[in-house]
Image (cartoon, rainbow, N blue to C red; front, side, top):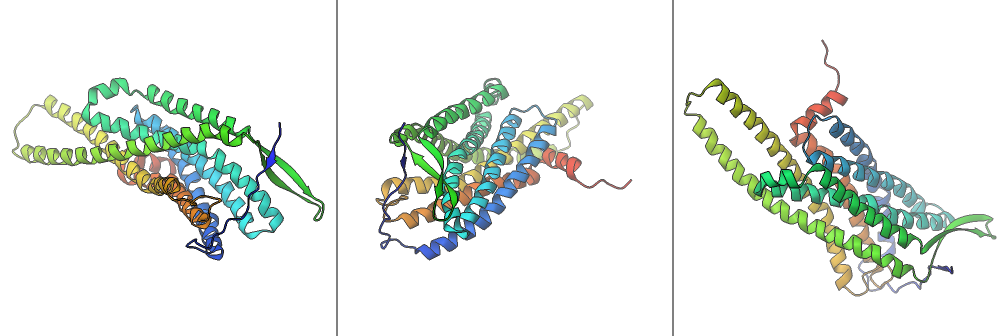
Length: 352
């Protein structure tokens, strides 16, 4: 099998809107500093999320998706930490180290697509299931079971792992010695058919991203409308109960149980709405970048707008890492059971 070095001419960037120096400052600020903070936060908070959701005494199908989402976001944070170290050496170390770190960074970008796409799928499943439960609550509970949701997410992830592995067969990591410096560096070489092999992975990842983003956006719109209607209905019901109509104790107990169940479901819907809103906001730059890359000539990593493309990718990476770190704040503020379980596990012991 013949492999060749990935080499290309330096593009003319005089038409670009940003200079090399400004790009370097932005890259160090975001990729090395901010993204490392986001990655550490995502890794730690999603370990906490997994522990709390595992301990929570609920049998709701959403629990499975929240657990998978926490695992996926935690892996993204872990890879982000390694990428932060690589970027620090890539931008601040010697030229020999920079070349090795760039090769490692490219590998990390390929590998992180698996947990990143799993996170996308988990969020999409949460949004679609909760949106459908508002319209067809009885059918959703019997059709969208926790087992079926888990099978769908894991099957889609397995397909992605397969296509990504196939694309990696066209890439080879070499340790190239430098006789002048007596040092070695990592070097990526690519098979002539690498582009063809990676196309399957690119197409699949594109479909997952576009469909997930579209599904979450549409479901977010309908869930917000349903939540407003539910709020108006609860307000009318509350005013009706103020008439103090006498009821039996058993009827009062059933009413209280139904009210608690409804309140718990309402909390889950609120959490899913906020998680979906954070998802849409943080992935909007990636959607815009994808559209611009397909419509603006030269806006790619080798074109005349290469520097602008790098700025775009820096913002995409930052927002996606931020997305992985924010969910815990939604859970703590809008899910009473999560907050109670969190305080039981990690809160200070009350004095007797």
